[in-house]
Length: 169
Image (tube, rainbow, N blue to C red):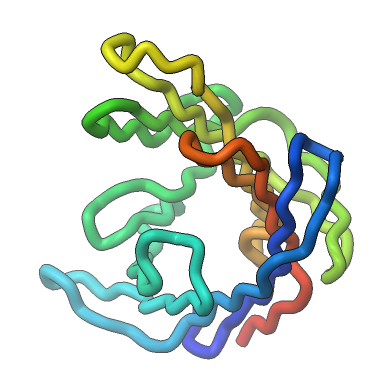
């Protein structure tokens, strides 16, 4: 990460993977500065417009792990299948792991060799919901996120974002 880096993504909505693709948003993520939080230096990243719950995130490199200001691990170069992040929320949990070997991914910005981060969303038994889903992020070392999927429990559609343009300082 460097101040001035940016990534532009096009977002698409599908009824199901590969069915009824519709473009609906262009999203930009930019490294806008550095900030010190609890004595540690973080890169400030701003997203606009945003589908995320936070439009500003803070990330730093911690021995090859990409972590946020709360200590949550966003990415870790671990062996396939090893869970590197687990969040317990009120009615579901999220487990993130590297899904397997590298994968070649083609998006409008080019073709990239990527690690695949799999995030499993697991609902608690109390909720009695059959909504367990998985999202995938395709990360190219030295470039960043190239492609990803998002699924929301309260919406039947499947979402995908693809890298259109990027600039690394």
